[in-house]
Length: 287
Image (cartoon, rainbow, N blue to C red; front, side, top):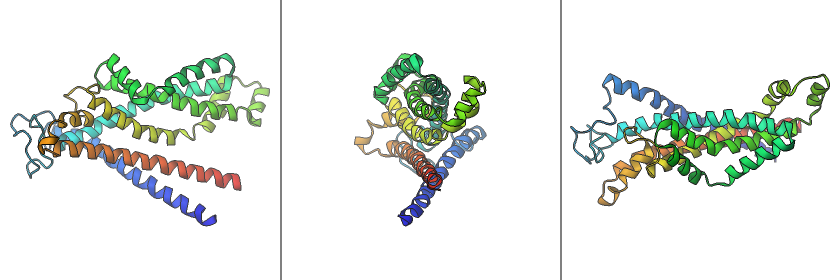
């Protein structure tokens, strides 16, 4: 038993470390690619008229070119920045909406809690990709619209987690003591409850980010994500679908590989954080 407790943190630490390295590399790529394109060291992701179409990987085009002569390597690198922007924007909006609603619902209870729980459970029961497809179809293609279509999917998850923890923490003695001293609901929510219920949000945030990358890729593959002028992995995979049977593999391999590695890194980071936090809580409880 003691041996398993000693091994679990080391495994979670390695997973979190590798996940963090992958995410940091993608963040650096997302930051440096526009600068390199602007400096002329990398080709424009949308320019390719001067290049041969479906050129195989070579020294001039490391990952080959697509059906429009665009450099696959540059589009794959630029797609990392687009994916991180959309996912980060979507999750921040979901966080800013879901966490306050969950705290208010769990603390106040009554009819407010029942109405919010009914609304969030309705959204939660809908399939993630289906709800995102419907919202993306209604909102149209674009970076803010894609982020809005994704954020609605994850609001119920933050709401449920924060609401359940708030309902537990509000029964603690320090909350009752604050209420007896005349502290108002806003003060209690901000001063006492927020820091106690926010601990599980980083784990959920990283796991949702991994899922959001896949959902964004699915929207792009269905033609409902971003405009064609914006490099996006799902859209590039959809365009490469017709070329794969003819032996042109490079237009699908590199965007798909980039998406897979980013999802893997975010999943490693989330699972590692979850194991580490749960191990820390178990040690504090045992002590």
